[in-house]
Image (cartoon, rainbow, N blue to C red):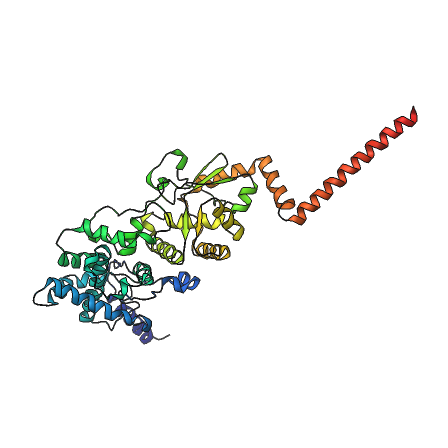
Length: 434
């Protein structure tokens, strides 16, 4: 290979190296990677509204652009006698460069002016939406968003999506302009009240007030507003997180655990969905409501935890892995439903099992900090006791179907008759001797 080719290749590499900054950009808003997306693409795609640049060109979302403009016009008419949008543009312009750095995959063709316009329209829509949700008097009489329940449900779902986000500080800057500077506690409550019905289980409350720049986006706000289990908060020894040097043994499904004399109980007064307790053969769980939006909500929280795993706050991922262990089929869903643990709004138990199993595929094997590690070990010890093993085998092999039960009954009857016949034969023998 000639020196010219070596020089040319080296020059090209050096040219590209100069274009790379020394520090890794601090991105907070990504596109979902292919492995997660391929499992269920619809879980990450908005149904009615595009927020931010990633879904801005989707044709079926264009209809909401008119609503964004109407909401901005209402703000201007109410708060600005000059009906001048420059105040909003000026506020966003000051943070435009910072906001641009938050996106890992901005379209190269998006100009600064277009980017600012997008931030203003999307941000003002979100702020005005949660204000109207809280205060009825702010709503227009003919506002279709508040005339149809499905619209609010779809907006709640779309606005939390991993890819459908604005930097949180942009929302706070706009809220300060619309309401009053420094009223972040009010904004926190408005956001929480709007999204609270999305949570499929208990334990949600507005996250503590912090600097807006410490919150990445609405999805992180929702994640941080869901209380983790005591294991993550330094709970007692019964909830200690175990660091395992070996691969964790997963527990069986609800049907098998019930066969091994594990009893499931509903903990309706528990503090959080994630606080699953096991003691002396009793597994206590808080109720989980499963509806159409639940899969997408959990899937996007899992995506958030995977991208920001260094926070070591993966309690949603750990719970989903636990749920995937105990739910394999409709029989498991039926057991948990009878106990009041699963509230099935989908109607079909097979659909619930399919949803849980699909969620489980997106979750990696538990790490060394798995929240439920000690509980899993305790369950294994219980199931390994000889009597519990015998009960499980007996139920699995002989009581799992009516035919198996009939076969066992006939077999036992045959043994009984054979014993009786032998006993009679022995008695007849001794009578003959006499």
